[in-house]
Image (cartoon, rainbow, N blue to C red; front, side, top):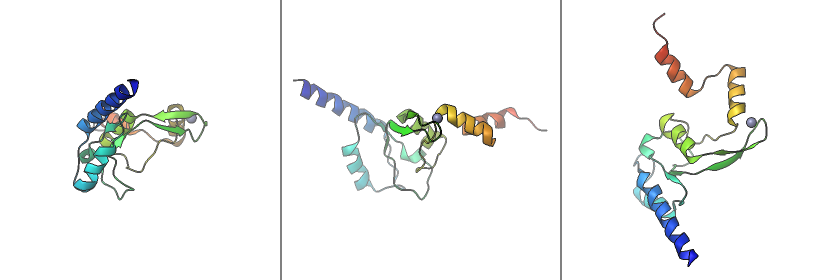
Length: 132
Ligand SMILES: [Zn+2]
């Protein structure tokens, strides 16, 4: 039956999501973590909590999942993908309660207007700029 195939695929997805999820005792207790692992969505990416920045935050992120949002500036419907979120929270050490608010084009325009640079750009400049 197709239903059972779906269930199997979902269970495999959940197992895959769990396999990249890493618990951090500073962020939540083990009981809660175990509970989260039972409800992890099959289409999510398990989060490595030990790599997340510690803030006084709304709650732990045990997984990332594609999130729909509407761009604040142009109103376009965009998706903040699970992979992008993982990069943001684990590599760029973004605040746990931050959310995507602008599409890529508007983000770029906004940065140019305000003179801000992206995290990645900052890292690059640091590396490139020599003394003087
Ligand atoms: Zn936009």
